Length: 104
Image (cartoon, rainbow, N blue to C red):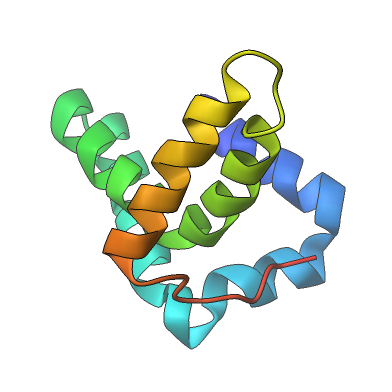
């Protein structure tokens, strides 16, 4: 139920039209299909597989936002420098961002 509430909350925050545009963009269709399939699998009583499929969908849909969260976490006192160092190493190994467009 939390997954459905997440989508409802996202719709309330950014609006219905932007939510629909975000989930139906060509680059995000694979993530949308995985997220929806995961919710359906959970409702059909396959929770572990549904959770893993849904998690994959979340990474595809919101993967670009994780870099923003990571840069914010890099400013936290005491642990921030370690987080920033790990993020720099991961970004050099990963090759950068895939879809720079955010829904808002």
